[in-house]
Amino acid sequence: MVIVQAGFQHLLVFPTWKKDYSPKMGAYSSNLSPDQFLFAMVGMREFVAGILWVRADSFFDEGNYDAVLPLLRVVTWLDPHQIDVYSTGMWHIAYNFTDAEQRSDRRYIPTALAFGKEGAEKNPDTYEMFFEVGWLWYHKIDDNYSNSVKWFELAATKKDMEEAAARKNLLPMAYQRNGQVDDALKLYFGLFDDAKKRYEKESAYGYHQNKDTIENNIDTTLVRMSQRGFFASKGGYFNTGDYDTKPPFNVGFSVKATVEDPKVVRFEGTWNVLPVGTRIRVVLKDADLVDDQPAGMVWDKGSAIDLEPSTKVTYMQEQLFVRNRRFNKRVDMSNDQTMYPFKGKNYVLEFYYNPRSAPPHMQDKFGWNGEGITDPNFLNSEIRPGQRVIFARLKMTRDQLLRRGEWMSEVPVAKTSNYKDQREFKDTDILIVPNIRATEQTKTEP
Image (tube, rainbow, N blue to C red; front, side):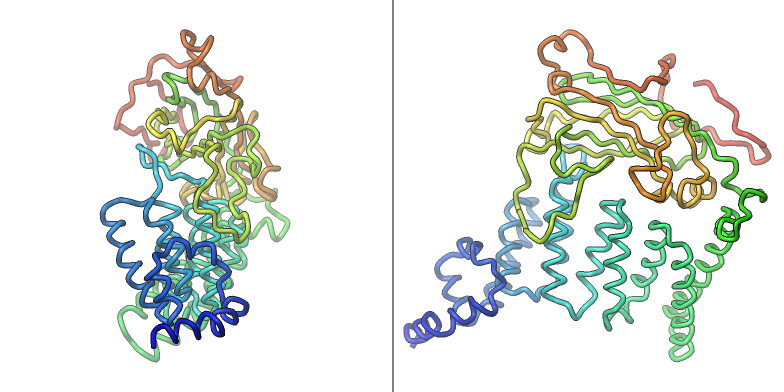
């Protein structure tokens, strides 16, 4: 009977399935053993997928992350409606592949996006994968916020999103990061009306808490729109008023990169902002990167799911944390040959600060679009349309980064023209903060 069933499947059912219903991932069937493939063909695909997913979970527990990737692909091929597999796999691909210092291998982000987009395509009736893709843009990529808005909006159209109140509240935050402050406020009012009706209908504590949270968000947003001069800009009288974003603050950015050892770079620099909260992005990448974008790369490369990123591309991204107007960060890439192959001849170091990613207390001065920020050397209003950001670029060669040739005995250094060497500064946990009554920030010696 099994033989007859297999023949029936092979001659009649399988050709129709392959033509009209296959996820078009047949190449991945080679990852199945013959008995697993037979189970799939006789209608036990979901059963096999469940077994494989249990096996993948054991690999997670063992930290054997590379072994998980093919299983993720096979499980979603067998059962494309396992949303947990898509969401977990997307998180795994984007976050779990790290170097010795826990920096993510961002070469995997295009794969994670493609995986999430496929999950959304296969499961269009639920918000979950649409939300997960939006969250990846919002949190991990932390740039190109129009994409997070796009996917959060798609998630909001799904019926089951009505029961995900906390997640619904992320869309207005994405609007603000995308410069759509009016849309954020409008949505907050709509969410508040819905939350109020829900609480009146069922007076559970969670509904009450959600209503209060949204109301607080409305109040806070209105205050910020007023104090940052947003309403004044809309009304055309920003130049005549006194707002927190005026006059623009000179951040005084400068940086020096020193290659202390092969693949070990120390970044030192200045940032004339005293309150804690500044994180400056630094990116080291190939100078001839095909999918290049200033301070990043083109993350969305379509729907193709490539489980193996290019072994020739080097891409490192780190945050330089500022305290007491300085930053000093040692980045060691020497223990991760696969993640940082350094195959090219030339590289760029890019330094980037975008107020839209800044915490609220920094945005109170800089504004949503950077109207309260300036720098005589590195203010840039081109690489992110409609925004004023800080952007600087330095160049280095592979020989410099690997300390080869003439650089074996000479220390490679790249720095901005305005960088001035400071006398030795011993890092400390003591933070210098402005006096609450101070009218201006005073310079502090180390």
